[in-house]
Amino acid sequence: MAQREPDPLPEGLVPLLDAERMRATDAWAIGTLGIPGLELMERAGAGLARAVADVAPGGDVVVVCGGGNNGGDGYVTARLLRAEGRAVTVLTTSDLAGLKGDAAANLQRLPGDPPQPFSAAALDGAAVIVDAVLGTGFAGAPRADVAGAIAAMNAASAPVVAADVPSGVDASTGAVQGEGVRAAVTATFHTAKPGLWIHPGKAHAGEVAVVDIGIPATGAPARAATGLIGAGVLGRYPRRGADSTKFASGHVLVAGGSRGLTGAPCLAALGAMRAGAGYVTACVPASLNAIVEIKLTEVMSAPLPDEDGAHTPAGAQEVLDRIAQRGGVVVLGPGMGRGDGPAAFARRIATQATAALVLDADGLNALAGRLQDLAGREAPTVLTPHAGELGRLLETSASEVGARRLEHAREAARRARAIVVLKGDDTIVAEPEGRVGVSPGDSPGLATAGTGDVLSGVVAALLARGMEPFEAACAAVHAHAEAGRRAAAALGGPDGVIASDVVEHLARTLV
Image (cartoon, rainbow, N blue to C red; front, side, top):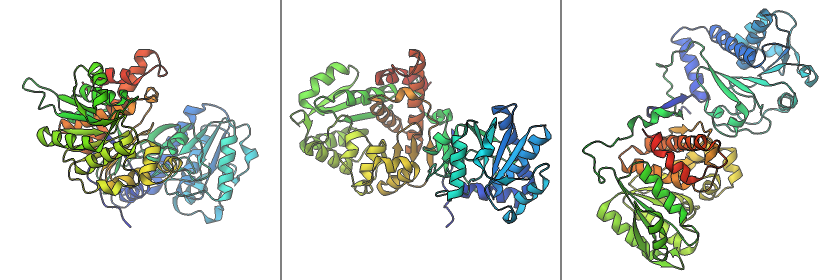
């Protein structure tokens, strides 16, 4: 079934074409623009050859080709490298008699020794290996002989350069079922593919190098539904001006906290303040209010009825009343705890609040298996789970979420009619209508307690300032990751970064 074309991606998201849209783009380039398929393959092979030379300027090359167009790219690369005087061995995992179209034409053009059936021994002594076995059209698990070839390439001492996508990686989703090539570099054609930036595929792709094969960047009928989040997402961040007021900058209410977990709502509140919220109210159990007052000098507090330092259902009405009086955006869950009282508190606010909602931490756990309860909300909803929390929401395991991150993020967004921010190195922002933003990651300083609370506050602040929900979530993810990088740089590395360091660097990411 053809995919419904999504709304355009926001400014700052670099398009990533999945397999279906890449096929449609190739067909448009060939059928409408009149670019011969052989010419596209020649340019792809030339870019792949350049990547090989960058990885290994000298030494023997082994090119492993499959039976489709990915193999054809490999034959072009082998021909061009042989023309440069490189010693190139070509191996195949397919029956050459079944080769068709442009791939068959490039096999005929290959000078020198013909391809030989794949042998692990033939990889010995190579300076670099080219993986041109499975391309963007692959999904599922490789057949046994191909899986064996992939395992042999991974076991070899030489670095692997993958053509378009590492064999065994689903280009559209990043899923890896069975064996997947672990490449040092992936030379991907026209645009990067989502699976190169989404784990587990991201861990297989190595450095991603996009090769221009002559297809125009605009005009294709297939519009990308997925984009890589870049700094341009902050282009619509509403800056404060001379006529701004705290009310115009938006109100955020943080409802959370419990005995032993007062830091979480405080970090969420500080994140919201540093991201530009005009004023923030921390709604915490009354017995903990003095602690929060001491920690947060710029934040208002609202002591709520509690039982043994935890929220109770009675406190939910006070939060709902505050929303009715002053509006705002609610961050629900940081440090809330998992008892029956806090869970009932969270469920009532989540389902009855008329304000925009950012659901995090134990607010998410309170809705485990009950995502449909959120689907009827009229105000925007953003969920910010890690893999374990999303697993509980979908009644599956964290490992299952980890294996198919994009699929599960989209499923949760569909069920809850909400924006889902699945946290990780490759943080995924999925909306119910199908658009997805993917963070390029590379912010290891965020791997410490409390940074997720900071992110929930940033999301809420951008919503409170009037940004469209999908754009707000993507912008918050970018700002949060960049603040983590800046904090690590200031401290000489990521290992000593703590969540409050990330808060301190947030404002610098938004200028």
